[in-house]
Image 1 (tube, rainbow, N blue to C red):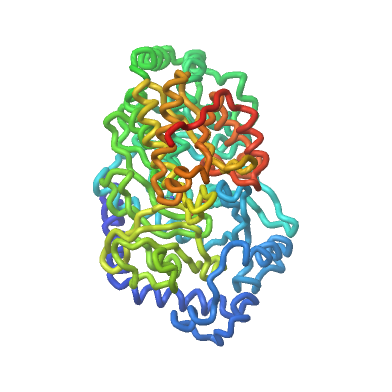
Image 2: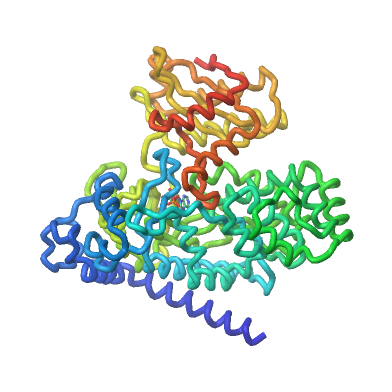
Length: 573
Ligand code: AMP
């Protein structure tokens, strides 16, 4: 009781602090920049730009250039090679203790980014703030959380720095773990499961731990919503193994990792035929797995994870599993640092916006329409789209994040932004320019045609096929079941017609761009794609299906090419 009251007081304090910070967002931004530059102005990177100890935004913007990852990669490489004893003063005054690997699904390979304690501190602040707003709307009791979280492979750089995904570093930070317990309740899975080196085994055991604690699970979460959908899709195929383990009171011999076996033995203490029967019964009676989550976990209050941007295509499936349980979209951040918090947790996930947190970094926004000069946080205009530029406490200065956001409004003095898409154009041959959002819109339209025949699009990607004249768009689909020739043809035509940008339409009309090709993939192909990224050091927790396969991504192309079962050309033009 006392604990609950204390939590309520703390939550209100966090909200109040956030309101204060955002009311004075302009001043907080100036102070944040000053702090970053005072700490790091003497580093090799910053001293070359002639700031001469000046820390005001105007001087900063006039002297320091806007950069991309490629521009700063040589510095990052030197930090990784030099190691913790010799890497201070390159981009940050304090040494960089670890390297993050971003998911890298856009570029085809993970990229290194500096990670330090300031990022942990920012994460704790963002998690607490987000929880404070969420808990007002959806209070949770003292139950447990089923969190589909996984660590990545960990490497050591040449200089001896730990390298892994940002989420992996966070999961091993005591401060972060404490915050995670406080804001999402204790995770029902032991650390051995989270840090297991085979994610198939970790996923199996996450599900098993959830079932063993089924009545106590109050929250189901993951970093990105894809992990939750992936988990329950997997459940559809393996549930009888899980039920058998519960009935026997011992872990399946398929799970071969010794640390996981020992940790799970402490949970699977004795046979539980009653629980096994109950789960069995539910699985047999659900219609097409609708409402699976509340059927298995009757006390779940909400489902939580990033559902915007490249996660939107999974929302329908998540809703299907969730039945009436609310979906709450999580915050906006990157391995580079945090940007904003979802302070309106009741808004539907597709409409989630993020109030930019003015003290976790210094933010600038490049207007997309004019492509002009970057403007400051408080200078953005409602309704306009911008590319995000961040300056962090971890050594990134005027760094283009590669994301496009739209300003939807203001929360006090700070903008609330909606995530639009990654900046780079996904598909372009000629005059046409289509982003991942345009591709998503086309896929959604065509998926409706398939849905009418009770077939789902499990996942998708695309490429430009330029080896023939004229070049054309190719869209790859994995579907949940076999679709007839006619349905595939209709989907293909619908995809082609749904790219409505004037460049595409005009070039298609004169055959400057060839007929769109839809290639249907074998079931399980995107599982292989994920295995490939995880094998390269990515984490399931941060996995995002690449929406376009570029020439640099030969291995991915090989996986797709080897799994095509059907192909179809549009006759829409
Ligand atoms: P990573 O560094 O691998 O975790 O990827 C970070 C990227 O994920 C960001 O730059 C965004 O493109 C995307 N992302 C992160 N949070 C969100 C969000 N809330 N909505 C949409 N996209 C997001």
